[in-house]
Length: 372
Image 1 (cartoon, rainbow, N blue to C red):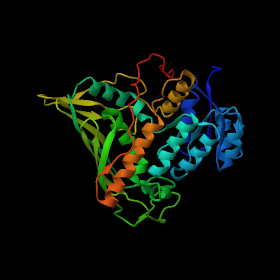
Image 2 (tube, rainbow, N blue to C red):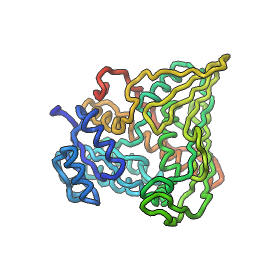
Image 3 (cartoon, one colour):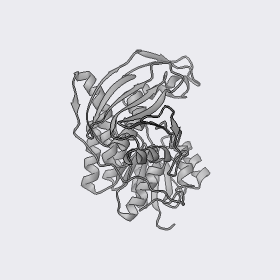
């Protein structure tokens, strides 16, 4: 336990709760939370009190000055990710960031280069691809259960966060929208199942210039839309497969609004919702007429947010590569922003980045202990 990697939180908002819970229970053998900070001091103080965290930093500078902190967990708002991550790397800290890595590709590429230059680890969400659902699907595809992958369909359909989120404004500001907000789950799953992409095409639009908040506490407030809210993209992969992706905050869709299907020469695989770590897996083989449910063969089917950070911490101690790596998050960012760029410029966008798929997760009886 003395060899645990020491981490500190910057940002203790809504998403921090599941990180705090999992990192102090399931993954407590790999990491130790030594401090937290937030612009709203009360949030940090509450988290520290509830989870027995010894340090509440008055600001980010004080966090970075703490020599015991090895990894910064960046849970700030999307348009702050780049600056917070860069400052952490320049201070000599490894950084793991919530998605997206940055709100534009140029900044993401800069962060990746900085991490390589300084010899520091850069990791990032989402880590749902490490869960039992998508990892079992990867095993099926890699083992030839659907033959040669030919194509894929990824869909996220909904009417927008203003109907339920208590503070939905930032989803419609620069750095928001359904692609940068939810696209990371779908595209991260796709590149882990199919490998790196080589080019993208797409269309992106804002169907409505304004939205009306119908959730509390700002019911009735009108907000301006600064970003596209409906995307249609085509992704070409290095292995020859082609995927189509639709992400939308503009439509009414009650059933099957979140899914991925991988289409192969010998079968089709229905992948669980990539927002989750587990879920239903179904396989239709050539010559069959009924879908078969496939049991999960690997651990972490429940909400295991923090798994990617724990894996990075384990990698820091052992020297192996970490799975939710900066190369992957930067590649995903280029795919997402490339779809919008393709729409703006009316052309195919050929990608500059690539990455090598990480080792698949291994089955272990000891949950929370990562493999070497």
